[in-house]
Length: 200
Image (tube, rainbow, N blue to C red):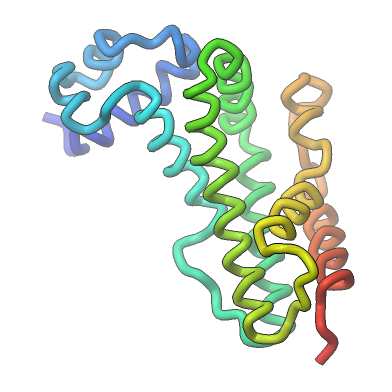
């Protein structure tokens, strides 16, 4: 008997199968066989395949935001929090698994808009919300003067962090989207601190 829970086995098997066959190419029968569980067990943990994808995506993107909300009491705290967030994000995006998974999702989203929306909310939505919380705390502590919503600033910062790197990797133009992650992150954080930062 496996030491992993049924839910973990289902998620691990689904991840492997999605890579191999694409999202729409994976049936519950295939998944049950691969995870060594019954179909009833799958449905006890997940409502459908899109729900499995959503949970997989949430687990993967949790690596970006970190386990705890950092304390943002000084300008240095803010700069460190944004820099660490950006480095975790680009490290995650530099993974060959992340690039391949993104390719699978983009191909499948054309055929299955519900799956595309679930992936977007679990990946981009949760990541953006985590960054917006940092920005809001900084504003609450007088470190940023917000002329836009924290969500909008977080979205702008995400775009500054990522640039065109993922697009190049998804199109096969390069193998690694970010060969100098620190430069991308430093430029992005500097821009936000310059535009919204309050000198203290």
